[in-house]
Length: 244
Ligand SMILES: O=P(O)(O)OC[C@H]1O[C@H](O[C@H]2O[C@H](CO)[C@@H](O)[C@H](O)[C@H]2O)[C@H](O)[C@@H](O)[C@@H]1O
Figure 1 (cartoon, protein in one colour):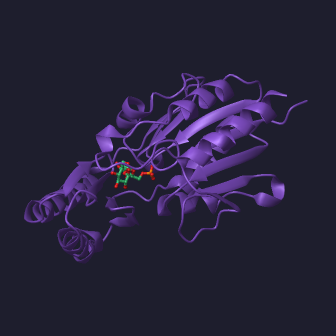
Figure 2 (cartoon, protein in one colour; figure 1 turned 135 degrees about the vertical axis):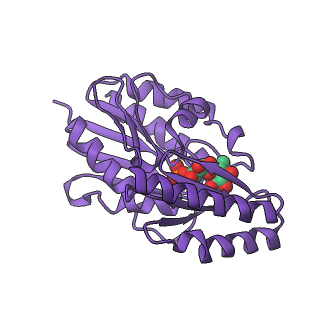
């Protein structure tokens, strides 16, 4: 009998190349094709585990119909084959803190052309990829010194993003939840950024889990591939292996 496998992938930088405009990110076509193939195999569940808002993830990723979806780093969660839906809405105090952090990031962004702010259900992000380097550096520093230091705010400093959350949910908690819902014997998780390191940290290599980092950077992952194009190659091998 086949073991049951959970194959979980971050989106940006893993299935989709990083681009300047987050709205323009799309999965590589062959990545999507392989994900669709994997999602129909017996004993396999595919999951997308993203920092994006769930509605945004669905819009840009066009995920397989059977895929488990995790948005906002785990604050939003959907299982199309079950009844597991989680939306960790902030409580009153967290909502007030989120409004304050958002107002401060928007003021910082207004001072630094090329930056923009993205609001999520439990967090807010300052994007700096499209700004001139001095403006990006200044805006980042102001965000770190200001709203990121507010009590109750959880900071993630990712790829050209300063992300502030008012809940302490992360991709590690998300992967634990996915493991428990699917009852998977082993988990594969592929990610490219600092937020994904929290996911790698909860995997159990000695029990058959596999972690893969895409691109450069310090990592706890067991393996590394160079780019989303190499992820496509890995997905093709997985289709062959899991389909046997
Ligand atoms: O943990 P992730 O799922 O990778 O989420 C991290 C952020 O991903 C997106 O931003 C990243 O990709 C953009 C499009 O390629 C790029 O412009 C940006 O610089 C990257 O940081 C997403 O837009 C954010 O909401 C996520 O927090």
